[in-house]
Image (cartoon, one colour):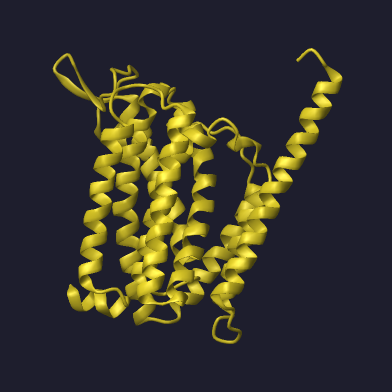
Length: 323
Protein backbone atom coordinates (compact mmCIF):
# COMPACT_ATOMS: atom_id res chain seq x y z
CA UNK A 1 0.00 0.00 0.00
CA UNK A 2 2.84 2.40 0.88
CA UNK A 3 4.53 1.69 -2.47
CA UNK A 4 1.23 2.37 -4.23
CA UNK A 5 0.86 5.79 -2.55
CA UNK A 6 4.42 6.85 -3.38
CA UNK A 7 3.83 5.75 -6.99
CA UNK A 8 0.83 8.06 -7.51
CA UNK A 9 1.91 11.09 -5.45
CA UNK A 10 4.88 13.06 -4.15
CA UNK A 11 3.18 13.16 -0.73
CA UNK A 12 4.78 10.69 1.74
CA UNK A 13 2.56 8.01 3.35
CA UNK A 14 2.62 9.83 6.70
CA UNK A 15 0.93 12.86 5.10
CA UNK A 16 -1.87 10.67 3.70
CA UNK A 17 -2.45 9.19 7.16
CA UNK A 18 -2.19 12.52 9.00
CA UNK A 19 -4.51 14.24 6.51
CA UNK A 20 -7.16 11.51 6.76
CA UNK A 21 -7.06 11.50 10.57
CA UNK A 22 -7.13 15.30 10.62
CA UNK A 23 -10.23 15.37 8.42
CA UNK A 24 -12.01 12.88 10.70
CA UNK A 25 -11.16 15.00 13.76
CA UNK A 26 -12.39 18.16 12.02
CA UNK A 27 -15.64 16.41 11.09
CA UNK A 28 -16.22 15.39 14.71
CA UNK A 29 -15.51 18.95 15.87
CA UNK A 30 -17.84 20.28 13.20
CA UNK A 31 -20.61 17.93 14.30
CA UNK A 32 -20.21 18.85 17.97
CA UNK A 33 -20.09 22.62 17.36
CA UNK A 34 -22.56 23.14 14.52
CA UNK A 35 -24.59 19.94 14.22
CA UNK A 36 -25.75 19.27 17.76
CA UNK A 37 -29.51 19.07 18.28
CA UNK A 38 -32.41 19.28 15.87
CA UNK A 39 -32.72 22.86 14.73
CA UNK A 40 -32.50 24.94 11.60
CA UNK A 41 -28.99 26.20 10.92
CA UNK A 42 -29.01 30.00 10.91
CA UNK A 43 -27.39 31.84 8.02
CA UNK A 44 -24.95 33.62 10.36
CA UNK A 45 -23.80 30.29 11.83
CA UNK A 46 -23.46 28.78 8.36
CA UNK A 47 -21.39 31.78 7.22
CA UNK A 48 -19.01 31.32 10.16
CA UNK A 49 -18.70 27.57 9.52
CA UNK A 50 -18.19 28.07 5.78
CA UNK A 51 -15.54 30.72 6.47
CA UNK A 52 -13.72 28.36 8.84
CA UNK A 53 -13.62 25.55 6.26
CA UNK A 54 -12.34 27.90 3.54
CA UNK A 55 -9.68 29.29 5.88
CA UNK A 56 -8.50 25.81 6.86
CA UNK A 57 -8.31 24.79 3.19
CA UNK A 58 -6.31 27.89 2.21
CA UNK A 59 -3.93 27.53 5.18
CA UNK A 60 -3.29 23.91 4.24
CA UNK A 61 -2.81 25.03 0.62
CA UNK A 62 -0.14 27.55 1.67
CA UNK A 63 1.64 24.99 3.85
CA UNK A 64 1.54 22.34 1.13
CA UNK A 65 2.81 24.73 -1.53
CA UNK A 66 5.66 25.86 0.76
CA UNK A 67 6.89 22.31 1.45
CA UNK A 68 6.16 20.62 -1.88
CA UNK A 69 6.64 23.46 -4.35
CA UNK A 70 4.64 26.35 -5.76
CA UNK A 71 3.60 24.31 -8.82
CA UNK A 72 1.77 21.71 -6.74
CA UNK A 73 0.43 24.47 -4.50
CA UNK A 74 -1.05 26.24 -7.52
CA UNK A 75 -2.52 22.97 -8.78
CA UNK A 76 -4.10 22.42 -5.35
CA UNK A 77 -5.74 25.86 -5.37
CA UNK A 78 -7.00 25.48 -8.96
CA UNK A 79 -8.43 22.04 -8.19
CA UNK A 80 -10.09 23.39 -5.05
CA UNK A 81 -11.64 26.26 -7.03
CA UNK A 82 -13.04 23.90 -9.68
CA UNK A 83 -14.49 21.47 -7.14
CA UNK A 84 -15.98 24.33 -5.08
CA UNK A 85 -17.68 25.68 -8.21
CA UNK A 86 -19.11 22.28 -9.12
CA UNK A 87 -20.34 21.81 -5.54
CA UNK A 88 -22.40 25.02 -5.83
CA UNK A 89 -24.27 23.47 -8.74
CA UNK A 90 -24.72 20.36 -6.60
CA UNK A 91 -26.44 22.54 -3.97
CA UNK A 92 -29.34 23.21 -6.32
CA UNK A 93 -29.90 19.46 -6.74
CA UNK A 94 -29.76 18.95 -2.95
CA UNK A 95 -32.35 21.71 -2.57
CA UNK A 96 -34.67 19.85 -4.96
CA UNK A 97 -34.09 16.57 -3.10
CA UNK A 98 -35.07 18.08 0.24
CA UNK A 99 -38.10 19.67 -1.41
CA UNK A 100 -39.19 16.35 -2.95
CA UNK A 101 -38.97 14.50 0.36
CA UNK A 102 -40.35 17.47 2.35
CA UNK A 103 -37.35 17.24 4.68
CA UNK A 104 -37.84 19.59 7.68
CA UNK A 105 -35.19 22.32 7.89
CA UNK A 106 -34.33 21.21 11.44
CA UNK A 107 -33.07 17.82 10.20
CA UNK A 108 -31.35 18.84 6.97
CA UNK A 109 -27.96 19.41 8.59
CA UNK A 110 -27.98 15.81 9.93
CA UNK A 111 -28.67 14.39 6.47
CA UNK A 112 -25.99 16.61 4.93
CA UNK A 113 -23.39 15.59 7.53
CA UNK A 114 -23.69 11.90 6.69
CA UNK A 115 -23.99 12.80 3.01
CA UNK A 116 -20.63 14.60 3.19
CA UNK A 117 -19.07 11.69 5.08
CA UNK A 118 -20.24 9.24 2.41
CA UNK A 119 -19.04 11.57 -0.35
CA UNK A 120 -15.54 11.69 1.18
CA UNK A 121 -15.28 7.88 1.17
CA UNK A 122 -16.66 7.69 -2.38
CA UNK A 123 -14.31 10.39 -3.73
CA UNK A 124 -11.30 8.79 -2.02
CA UNK A 125 -11.97 5.51 -3.83
CA UNK A 126 -12.53 7.19 -7.22
CA UNK A 127 -9.44 9.39 -6.95
CA UNK A 128 -7.10 6.57 -5.92
CA UNK A 129 -8.50 4.37 -8.67
CA UNK A 130 -8.33 7.17 -11.24
CA UNK A 131 -4.76 8.05 -10.27
CA UNK A 132 -3.72 4.43 -10.66
CA UNK A 133 -5.28 4.31 -14.12
CA UNK A 134 -3.60 7.55 -15.19
CA UNK A 135 -0.17 6.37 -14.05
CA UNK A 136 -0.67 2.98 -15.71
CA UNK A 137 -2.49 3.93 -18.91
CA UNK A 138 -1.75 7.43 -20.22
CA UNK A 139 -4.54 7.22 -22.81
CA UNK A 140 -7.11 7.36 -19.98
CA UNK A 141 -6.42 11.10 -20.05
CA UNK A 142 -8.23 11.31 -23.39
CA UNK A 143 -11.26 9.46 -22.02
CA UNK A 144 -11.42 11.89 -19.09
CA UNK A 145 -11.19 14.81 -21.51
CA UNK A 146 -13.99 13.40 -23.65
CA UNK A 147 -16.20 12.91 -20.57
CA UNK A 148 -15.71 16.57 -19.61
CA UNK A 149 -16.52 17.88 -23.09
CA UNK A 150 -19.70 15.77 -23.19
CA UNK A 151 -20.62 17.00 -19.70
CA UNK A 152 -20.09 20.61 -20.81
CA UNK A 153 -22.52 20.10 -23.70
CA UNK A 154 -25.01 18.47 -21.32
CA UNK A 155 -24.76 21.44 -18.94
CA UNK A 156 -25.64 23.80 -21.79
CA UNK A 157 -28.66 21.76 -22.87
CA UNK A 158 -30.25 20.84 -19.55
CA UNK A 159 -32.62 23.04 -17.57
CA UNK A 160 -33.08 23.41 -13.81
CA UNK A 161 -36.67 22.24 -13.90
CA UNK A 162 -38.32 20.67 -10.88
CA UNK A 163 -37.55 17.01 -10.40
CA UNK A 164 -39.16 14.42 -8.17
CA UNK A 165 -36.27 12.81 -6.29
CA UNK A 166 -38.62 10.10 -5.05
CA UNK A 167 -38.42 8.59 -8.54
CA UNK A 168 -34.63 8.36 -8.43
CA UNK A 169 -33.23 4.98 -9.55
CA UNK A 170 -31.74 4.37 -6.09
CA UNK A 171 -35.15 4.77 -4.44
CA UNK A 172 -36.82 2.44 -6.94
CA UNK A 173 -34.15 -0.15 -6.09
CA UNK A 174 -34.55 0.32 -2.33
CA UNK A 175 -38.33 -0.09 -2.57
CA UNK A 176 -37.76 -3.66 -3.72
CA UNK A 177 -35.64 -4.68 -0.73
CA UNK A 178 -36.45 -2.29 2.12
CA UNK A 179 -39.73 -1.45 3.92
CA UNK A 180 -40.42 2.31 3.88
CA UNK A 181 -42.65 4.75 5.69
CA UNK A 182 -43.84 8.22 4.69
CA UNK A 183 -43.67 9.43 8.29
CA UNK A 184 -40.73 11.46 9.59
CA UNK A 185 -39.92 10.51 13.17
CA UNK A 186 -37.57 13.20 14.46
CA UNK A 187 -34.06 12.89 13.07
CA UNK A 188 -34.18 9.08 12.84
CA UNK A 189 -33.23 7.32 9.62
CA UNK A 190 -35.14 4.17 10.66
CA UNK A 191 -38.22 3.56 12.84
CA UNK A 192 -40.07 0.52 14.15
CA UNK A 193 -43.66 0.18 12.98
CA UNK A 194 -45.60 -2.92 14.06
CA UNK A 195 -42.32 -4.66 14.81
CA UNK A 196 -40.91 -3.90 11.34
CA UNK A 197 -37.86 -1.63 10.88
CA UNK A 198 -38.68 0.89 8.16
CA UNK A 199 -36.68 3.57 6.38
CA UNK A 200 -37.88 7.14 6.92
CA UNK A 201 -37.90 9.95 4.30
CA UNK A 202 -34.68 11.25 5.93
CA UNK A 203 -32.85 8.05 5.02
CA UNK A 204 -34.27 8.12 1.50
CA UNK A 205 -33.11 11.73 1.06
CA UNK A 206 -29.63 10.65 2.21
CA UNK A 207 -29.57 7.77 -0.29
CA UNK A 208 -30.52 10.07 -3.18
CA UNK A 209 -27.90 12.62 -2.15
CA UNK A 210 -25.24 9.88 -2.17
CA UNK A 211 -26.48 8.57 -5.52
CA UNK A 212 -26.38 12.12 -6.91
CA UNK A 213 -22.82 12.59 -5.67
CA UNK A 214 -21.89 9.41 -7.51
CA UNK A 215 -23.05 11.09 -10.73
CA UNK A 216 -21.26 14.34 -9.86
CA UNK A 217 -18.07 12.42 -9.12
CA UNK A 218 -18.00 11.24 -12.75
CA UNK A 219 -17.63 14.92 -13.72
CA UNK A 220 -15.53 16.28 -10.86
CA UNK A 221 -12.84 13.58 -10.68
CA UNK A 222 -11.77 13.92 -14.35
CA UNK A 223 -11.94 17.71 -13.86
CA UNK A 224 -9.39 17.72 -11.04
CA UNK A 225 -7.12 15.32 -12.93
CA UNK A 226 -7.04 17.84 -15.77
CA UNK A 227 -5.25 20.18 -13.37
CA UNK A 228 -2.97 17.70 -11.59
CA UNK A 229 -2.00 14.06 -11.89
CA UNK A 230 -0.77 13.94 -8.31
CA UNK A 231 -3.26 11.81 -6.38
CA UNK A 232 -2.81 13.60 -3.05
CA UNK A 233 -3.38 17.03 -4.58
CA UNK A 234 -6.52 15.73 -6.29
CA UNK A 235 -7.72 14.01 -3.11
CA UNK A 236 -7.03 16.85 -0.64
CA UNK A 237 -8.44 19.65 -2.83
CA UNK A 238 -11.54 17.57 -3.55
CA UNK A 239 -12.13 16.70 0.10
CA UNK A 240 -11.69 20.29 1.30
CA UNK A 241 -14.23 21.46 -1.30
CA UNK A 242 -16.73 18.84 -0.11
CA UNK A 243 -16.19 19.59 3.59
CA UNK A 244 -17.64 23.06 3.25
CA UNK A 245 -20.62 21.85 1.25
CA UNK A 246 -22.97 21.49 4.22
CA UNK A 247 -22.32 25.01 5.52
CA UNK A 248 -22.41 26.43 2.00
CA UNK A 249 -25.85 24.92 1.50
CA UNK A 250 -27.34 26.92 4.36
CA UNK A 251 -25.61 30.08 3.10
CA UNK A 252 -26.70 29.79 -0.52
CA UNK A 253 -29.94 27.76 -0.34
CA UNK A 254 -32.16 30.86 -0.47
CA UNK A 255 -30.64 32.38 -3.58
CA UNK A 256 -28.64 29.66 -5.39
CA UNK A 257 -31.47 29.57 -7.94
CA UNK A 258 -30.66 33.17 -8.89
CA UNK A 259 -27.25 32.13 -10.22
CA UNK A 260 -28.74 31.77 -13.69
CA UNK A 261 -25.39 31.84 -15.46
CA UNK A 262 -23.75 29.26 -13.19
CA UNK A 263 -24.42 26.32 -15.51
CA UNK A 264 -23.15 28.10 -18.66
CA UNK A 265 -20.08 29.14 -16.64
CA UNK A 266 -19.47 25.59 -15.45
CA UNK A 267 -20.03 24.33 -19.00
CA UNK A 268 -17.33 26.73 -20.23
CA UNK A 269 -14.94 25.57 -17.48
CA UNK A 270 -15.54 21.87 -18.12
CA UNK A 271 -15.25 22.41 -21.87
CA UNK A 272 -11.95 24.27 -21.41
CA UNK A 273 -10.34 21.69 -19.13
CA UNK A 274 -11.72 18.84 -21.25
CA UNK A 275 -10.06 20.29 -24.36
CA UNK A 276 -6.92 20.90 -22.30
CA UNK A 277 -6.74 17.18 -21.56
CA UNK A 278 -7.37 16.23 -25.18
CA UNK A 279 -4.54 18.46 -26.50
CA UNK A 280 -2.20 17.96 -23.54
CA UNK A 281 0.35 15.97 -25.56
CA UNK A 282 0.51 18.65 -28.25
CA UNK A 283 -0.09 21.98 -26.47
CA UNK A 284 0.89 22.60 -22.84
CA UNK A 285 -1.29 25.00 -20.87
CA UNK A 286 0.31 26.05 -17.59
CA UNK A 287 -1.41 25.75 -14.22
CA UNK A 288 -1.36 29.55 -13.83
CA UNK A 289 -3.02 30.06 -17.21
CA UNK A 290 -5.69 27.48 -16.32
CA UNK A 291 -6.33 29.20 -12.99
CA UNK A 292 -6.73 32.61 -14.66
CA UNK A 293 -9.15 31.23 -17.27
CA UNK A 294 -11.26 29.40 -14.67
CA UNK A 295 -11.32 32.39 -12.30
CA UNK A 296 -12.30 34.75 -15.15
CA UNK A 297 -15.19 32.49 -16.21
CA UNK A 298 -16.48 32.20 -12.64
CA UNK A 299 -16.29 35.96 -12.08
CA UNK A 300 -18.10 36.64 -15.36
CA UNK A 301 -20.87 34.12 -14.55
CA UNK A 302 -21.28 35.43 -10.98
CA UNK A 303 -21.29 39.13 -11.83
CA UNK A 304 -23.61 38.60 -14.81
CA UNK A 305 -26.08 36.70 -12.62
CA UNK A 306 -25.96 39.45 -9.99
CA UNK A 307 -26.38 42.25 -12.53
CA UNK A 308 -29.36 40.66 -14.31
CA UNK A 309 -31.04 39.84 -10.96
CA UNK A 310 -30.54 43.46 -9.87
CA UNK A 311 -32.15 44.79 -13.08
CA UNK A 312 -35.13 42.44 -12.68
CA UNK A 313 -35.62 43.49 -9.03
CA UNK A 314 -35.50 47.12 -10.08
CA UNK A 315 -38.18 46.55 -12.74
CA UNK A 316 -40.42 44.77 -10.22
CA UNK A 317 -40.14 47.67 -7.78
CA UNK A 318 -41.09 50.14 -10.51
CA UNK A 319 -44.09 48.05 -11.53
CA UNK A 320 -45.24 47.64 -7.93
CA UNK A 321 -43.60 50.26 -5.64
CA UNK A 322 -45.52 48.94 -2.59
CA UNK A 323 -43.72 45.56 -2.62
